[in-house]
Image 1 (cartoon, helix red, strand yellow):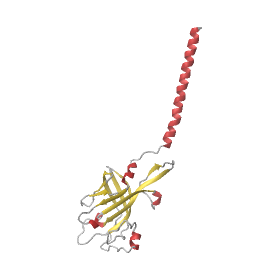
Image 2 (tube, one colour):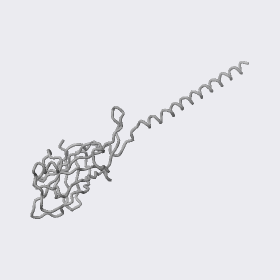
Image 3 (cartoon, rainbow, N blue to C red):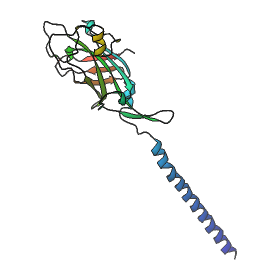
Image 4 (cartoon, one colour):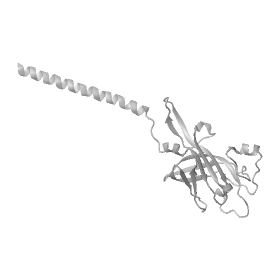
Length: 210
C-alpha cells in the first residue's frame, strides 16, 4: 500500500512539473512575437545620422572656390518626387517615422568640367540626397538646374536658385553645363568624406566643421 502511495505521489509530481514546463514554454512562445513585432529592424544606415552637419573642402590656393556640404535628417515627404533612400526610426512616444539624409551642396563647375582654361568657374547651390553605396561609400545625388549657375560663390544664407536670383546674383554665361550628377564619397570617418573624381582630378577631402 505504501509503495502504491509513493508511486502515486511521484507520478503526480512529475505530471505537475511537466505541466509547469509546458506553461513556461507557452508563455515564452507568446512573448516572442510581441518583442519582434515592436522592434524596428536595424538598417545598414542607422549611421547616416552621424553625418549630419557642415562639411568643407577648403581650397587653399583659391579660398573662394571652396566647396560645402550641408547635411541634415529630413522627412522624405518634404522632398518633391522623392525616390531616394530612407529608413524608419521609432520615436520616444512609440511613433514610427520615415527619415532620409539630404541637404545642400554649395559647389562650382570644376566638379563637372574636365579641363577649364582661361575662365573662372561658375557657382551654384543645389539640393542633394544621400544614400549608402558599396565599400563604405556614400552616393550624393545632385538635383541641379544647368541654367542656374552664378558668377560668384553663394553664402549659406542663400538656400535656393530662386533666392540667389532674387538677391541679384548674376548668371554665369560661359557655357551651359549639366550639374545633375552623382558624386561618390569614401567615408574615412564620420568627420571626413573623400570625394574621388571620375575626371582624373585630385581627390578632395571634406572635413566636418560643425
